[in-house]
Length: 441
Length: 128
Image (cartoon, rainbow over all chains, first blue to last red; front, side, top):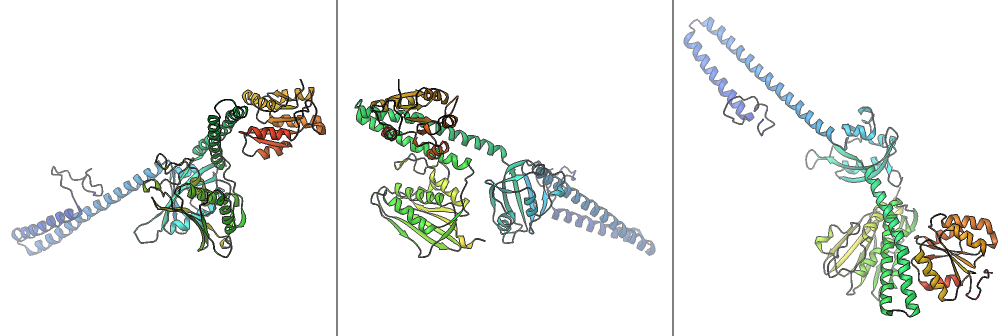
């Protein structure tokens, strides 16, 4: 075939001149040949057939013959179009069925209207019809839930947003296949938008079995936790010896002080590593209680004021409480982590501003510093676990870079968002939002 | 030899280190490298306080505590848990210990903790 797969005729042209047969050219050729035939045959009849009766009979026969030829050509054309469409459909079908990931197509009413072979395998269904049901029904049947066990309501959460035009990437969940096996899955879906500006009529979801990946991750986190735990005994030995020698007046006192200090630093980092590992492996058991975010912010700020070397932390709070539902300790850690970052990355001083506002059913906390700011080329990765935006620069103030990634994870698990604005040399403002308790159903 | 402090720890370096720290302050220290050895020591002579590591081979801290309390009841000397775990306090409560030390520790904390239960002159005497 030539490079034009949409043309039914390129394969049929046996002529040596490989001219691309566009529809316009075909029709023009037909018209030209037809016109020429009509002119020629009419002329021929006029010239060679004297008898008017015979002439009219021949003319009719010629006309009918013309229609027959045209009809045959039309038939061939239509057949080949159909065949081509069938081939293309089959190709698409083959592509879909060859995909290792499950593909589901959902219509506006939230019903699954198409799926591929991998979807059958993923759900362990024997028949397509078992899966051509409303998404909500299938989700209930497979006990679809979040990784930490809480219920996941796809109809409410995903479909409405997707059919409204949003794409959803990598939502992790647990489900029980129809054969009883529990697997971890990752769901990504996006709207099918036939024309820009139109509301999507369908959404397509890709579901991947990530049980294996999860297992390796858990193994790795386990290892991390064990390793960090094991570090502590050697650290204890070295630190204690340094202190003992110091106490006994043996050795270089200053050097022993340094050793002790560095051990403390190592210990802090080990502690942070353990925090990270524990957070994941335990599936982030977040408690749920109702508390006043306003009071919590004041509390954390007060605690940090003592460590701020006289730097001022300005607090802007509304007059009414901002009640939220969630893990008070963890959110407190998030606020503390953001404040500590603000302090750490404004070495030249400058005030830190913490402001709490209410907006459309959410409480939004912003923490602003007038410090180093984040270089633009490093901003995209700021929430990556262990990423340090100032690593290797003259402003590298150390640390393990854990705070932001974990903080954002805590916030998103509470149904909120975290984001930031930053200019190098001017400072950064970090924001996070939490749904207000009274707004929840 | 009478030991006022029994240190139960499988890491030899750490065990001898704690012994040195306490000896410097005048304590008599005996060592055991696992729960079973510790039980044998206690059977010979009840110490004034036991510093107990939790993760040990042969018999770990939990198993030792269970056996120890079962055998000696109210005559049992206090236990101080020495642990690398994040939640040292929880570990202590789990086995009914009377105190805890987190690794790595300040050596002064070790001395202070031991002093709560025994004083150096009471070599061989149990805590009241």
